Image (cartoon, rainbow, N blue to C red; front, side, top):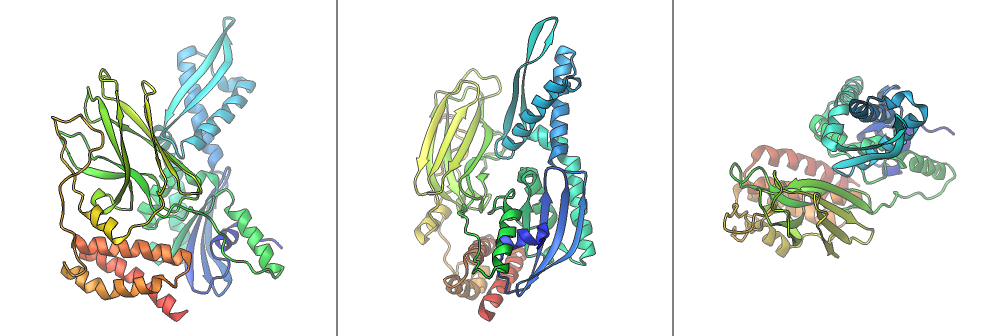
Length: 449
């Protein structure tokens, strides 16, 4: 039997659908792009609409990177590597590897020795590509995929708010810009808990098991239950002293997971940087949980524009998080291992997280990339604001049903509970209403089951 790719992708996440759901499957592969609107109900998977571009995919991204590298080499040496078959073949492999690295790292280097010769002398190629430059190259192509998303929704006679989930398929969908564009356009966090490269093949295996009469359960994948990142200044200290949460590994990433970002010290002549590691979902670090911290010392104080610091997170299947901070110019490095990075909030942790306030940049202290807070904020009780009191009964019911919910529903419920609490705490009526309706829908299905 032949199973189409959107159906296979959906089966990976939901082999036995007992409720009516509408999903968007965003499939960006090596050579083609497809987006499908899929409806599931009582083990029936129906494709409502599809749209795509058979000439848009990761190969086009490779070509843009190849042109970028070859143009830079030609400017320096006067040789177009695209006209040399062996050099072009080598570079295509190198730029594809760089593209893959840029999905989780802020920069990648394309390096090839003896790629060409000039006047009998061998020439080497070594070019660093920033993720921001790469995303600028592919932005127009990804804009076309978003246009296809809009058309598919229109053909299915649906709006973005009617979607229940967004699923990413295909290796090229790992590009961080894809996630940001979909969140901006649809208001949904895309699901990435199953490897996008394996999603369709795993779904096909599920379909085969169902046809043969096997008892097929949901595919078990270890994921990060919380977004992991560090605290950093929103802008230069003389303009903004506000500390914000900078994500490095996003929630629901399949394990093992890795990610890295580049930061800059707050000022020139800075001798040390403090790295505070947090888990949580809010931009305001006061509502997240600090799980570790360390200092990177002996920075290059002569750096003209301040030091660039690469912060890398690596988490294994056991929830052990290794944090590495490296000063790019000197290679100065410091590591931290956090053994309980997957631990969840308890009431005392939440109180501590809410009690942390940012300390404005202190000229008398070592200039810090990330600074800790010592001031306190009184922890709000369940009835400390009118909005919290109003949402209290719904929150109590949600916590009670949380014990009986399936793993995926439970994860979504936890996220909505936190969002509702946060919106109520800050007095955001619009967000409270929006999140409350989403939570009520889930509770309705659970009580009906």
